[in-house]
Image (cartoon, rainbow, N blue to C red; front, side, top):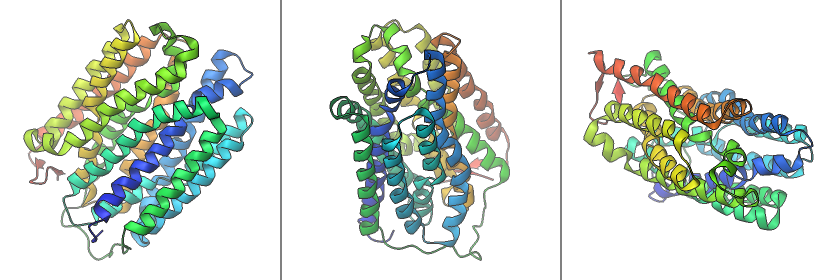
Length: 391
């Protein structure tokens, strides 16, 4: 990434790619509802699995992508994965039954995670890794901000299947952008090991923090059709209101990700992560008492604002020192949360009230806080000048 344009091309490509995924993802639960001939409880369970199966499989393929990035140019891996994911979107457009949609989403998961290659490229760039990871996360978050509202409106106007085709075109454009704007890289020299490689304990802690924090982000979309009517939203307006709700809270995610480097400089990475987890879990629990969609949206905005900085801070802490496999492992925790969140939320909601969903997810965030605090109490761990957790 030696050419100046690469510094903006990679975040821009991640913005476009994430936009395409969220553009399609927001309408998928509503499309599944329309396709289904099953009862509401069974349809809800299918929804959770269809939304979650891609990230579940990518949990396994992301570390493989990371290891592959050790031996090939990660730029080539990035371009290939985006191109094949575009074909996967066409498979979603062609699906006519719930099992066919499940298979299409499974194939998407097998294609791996393009973000793994992006983080490997950043780790080898030699620049300010925390800031570059933050830029990529901000680009991804902006895609999440802009995609849902646009996807909901387009799907409502032109239909679900055509919106999937448009998403595929966006992914191919993203692949072309990286092909043009990012210089070729080189596989890592196996003899050039970092002076302080990541320890197993550090890798496990970062992965658990990423898993818990990302689960608190990814759960909501899958249950929007069920939770919006009790908040006063008319059934025929749930798609549009759901898109706007995700858009508004996505703004919070973008702001939180962009603020991550500065907040870490002020507080230190671990202290910042600890307080963000506590704040996010508190606001998530208060969603249980929201009486209307406006109060719900405000609390969700604050919750996402708190949790958004956790991922860029956690990844930046190890990106420069970690192997491609380690980066893929941490990234698989984020992707795994995109499976756990929808499946856990829909499973709980099929038999319990929405408040139970929010309280369980809040408890997951609180459960990993002692892990971060425990690292603080061990003298051989410290905050390094770049803000990373070191061993």
